[in-house]
Length: 518
Length: 73
Image (cartoon, rainbow over all chains, first blue to last red; front, side, top):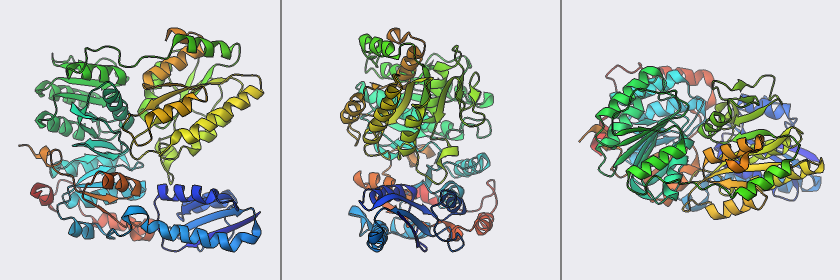
């Protein structure tokens, strides 16, 4: 085995491109392991700790691209290095965009596209507020996909946007469908009369997918950032979005989604809803009560319930259950397979709100529940990931995404966790979301299904069963092929349902032996 | 017509700053687009970036700058 580093000076590639190219190099016969990162101090330290840095870190700058390779055939060192260099050079001008003009500055971009009205910003967090601010100052609306943006920065950016009559969607809620155009993480949903404003990216995706799957359609969907309804931000963009949907002739029903808002902001939002001329559905997940609602404001406590109510109000269907569960005999079989073995749940989520909704289902049960998300009745993670009780992790949380792609884009880290979880004899149930749509991995089941299978084989080797429950969030129009994804996950024995609430309820039922009645 | 109509109900024209994968989606939807050849500002130097941020000027509340572009289109 030979280790080598290539340092491409002043060469920037984004984290998704780096992931794709690393995977491509790992598919080469001569390469055992390939890692490509920008040479930021934290990344260089990571490479050094992993023993992947062959020279000193001194010569590497934050604008340099570092490729660390472990080569199994030392004779091929030079040819592998040359191919890697070519690969990364070619990536600058890939695909159908190779002849496209790419200005280096925002002002250059605005010369090329003088009527631009939106900047989509997805640069690393430490630069995100700077770039978003530049765009707002030039009169552009902003969708800020990046996370790791501070609350102070968010407040500042949103105040600036409001002053200028602009939208500042995000941060850390990188999704929108504007006049049928998907932005960031978004699903292919038919056009229709239901408009959404959501402080939850995956909450928005779940509801739009359930609406699409039940024959409804979406007019607009605006992700306003996970903290928009905290009192510090004051619902600046949700209130602006609500006004926009009230004015939008294509919207007949409005849906608002968030985790519990700050008390002052909740009052503002409900007051605004009373002024709204259209019927509305409010889903503040985990909120205890709320101001009394006006006659055309309907409060729902789950994402599935919000989708169902919105469909009924839009006249698509009469509020019947939109998500059939799996057959009871399948659940009985799985329940029986767990026998006397461990029944603890390990939930690995890419969607923060989906993780949060699952915690709402699991908290208050006899078994302790731990998570990296904060919620009353849920214990924090101390000393690493403690083994006692159920554990649900939001792997899309910014603590896990610094310098690397979101888990919706890169299933790799989740695959490793699935296999790790199988080693714990107390664990009997794996729970995960698989979110499809634009921006997400082109074929997540192709990576997750083999990992589930490996986890099950490991458990089986110890004489245990391991049941996997998947919330598959997507539509038939999504580029990943919903049916293919479902089939690949079902082929490894996973219970696959289109609703996160249903998946969490099934997992909870399996954990205490009552799944067939869930 | 309220100010919010300036994003909704208009033809989107996008400057993409960051992940190329989002530009790919927009190209597929024939959205007029410029993808920036973005590099970390100040060559990734944290101290210089901090100085650049300060140079962006006063916090909101001032009348500096212009929002005219959004109102044109």
